[in-house]
Length: 162
Image (cartoon, rainbow, N blue to C red; front, top):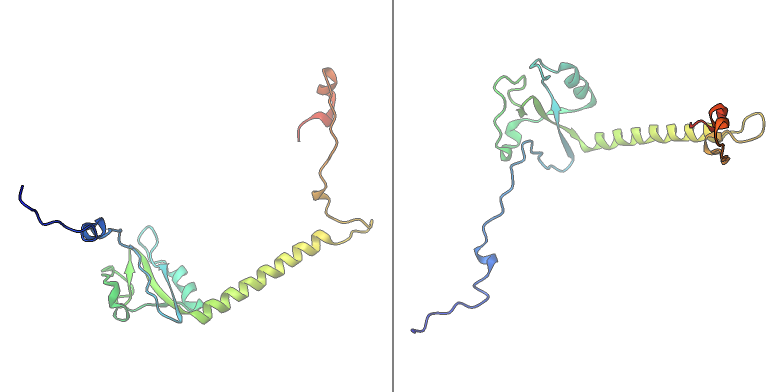
């Protein structure tokens, strides 16, 4: 048998011959830019009419349509009948951007509102009523059990399941 050229183990590995992993494309990509947040907003209702109510509200919050010229890396083709020909719109969704500071401010506002609501709930749950006992009776379950047999069970309202 003739001497065949042998390949070393380091050169003969699966990693050297592996195919690149395939992954599906992101249908709605979001660019990454420092200081900006991006979001796909509904611009068309399911029946094909413009969703002006939603867009009007979002624009008042500070969202601005993202221009396709600002993000050529997305390589997207917008809808032909778009209300925003310079924007990026796919399947009735418009890519919009807002300053990160506005998002942080909005999140702080809603965090404060939530904290105030939780404080209010806690205060009403723990406040004292005129009898001097706590108003948290919902946390005091009935701990009484009783076994009734026969005809007594049918006539006993306490033995009925709650």
